[in-house]
Image (cartoon, rainbow, N blue to C red; front, side, top):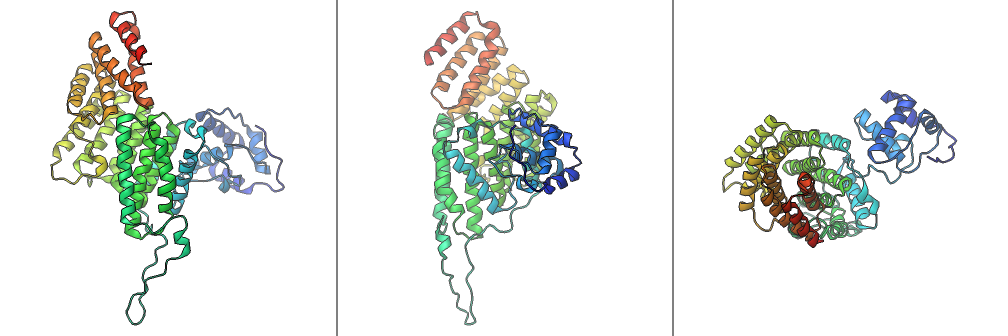
Length: 477
């Protein structure tokens, strides 16, 4: 790696942190190289490279951010390139920070929105990193809601005569954003429902960019506007929900590193909102992504952190959702007993729900159809195909047509179960229907579900039902 000419002064900040972390020069170089490999970077630094950094040379590109992340992991506190005496850059890790305060959270997430709404195609190629889950989930678990989120809203002054004097609106409050109202927040909620409906029916790629631009042009000015405590909490809650949805749609198009960053920032915004339950839902979303990518252990840990974070205070439906997420992680790991225990807890929690219970809007999707879907996926992963087929069929019977992508996933699970039971004709018929639906969606996950089934078909490639299946799928292309 080419580096800039040496500065005149040694980098004492870096030297102090190396001493605190107990690294040797070679040890630090090795850890930076290893972290680079996680992101597909072949860096090949050595102890001589670290010596040059200590003398004042500045590593180029994303290396300062990688060095900062090595120290963050080692010392258990977030450090930036500047903290190490290194130049700031457009870091690989930008967006994985768990901000120290609401103002910093707004800066980080709005920077993410702006980059994503532009022509930064490389942003969608950033790799998912399991290690990037540790610090945010820990900070959320041990953290508390921010004491103050109000911005630009001065309390009324009461003079000696006792008549309140309404403060004059300052020009700065009318800059990036106006005084936020309940109507503004209602609009954010309505937009969220609109994009959620589009995502369910047509896939994350259908309107993802429109959602990101909305966040940049409408939500950011509100967050930088003027609001009191109560309105501010509601604003941060709405922003967290839209940011999680931006991450969800990114996940659906396989932009996994970008999705991970959106989820981390949604988690931080939920803390500013003081909404512990919604934070647990964001962690469940992160857990589902980990399951999809095959990181079962991380998926289980995230689900458990979510459960710890809300304790027994969450409504039964939310409790069911959290236990089902843990079950999915155990299923990927092949842990039959633990998976079954989590499914039983999820089932009991959902049975405890009553029609009059107050359920958060984001948890209303979790019903009998969704629980049956979770059972079907888990039994498929555990290769318990008869049970998988029974639950998948039940989910398809109960699931509303508007959840088109979820129904597609469940249909592929059913096809896989039928294949596992030796019912090749029925399996191919179900999968062909799913493949036709996937061709109509903008969802990489939908395509990957179908491809996973096709890989399982390989031992039967010469059978007539498989040839027929391939002919049908070829016609969709």
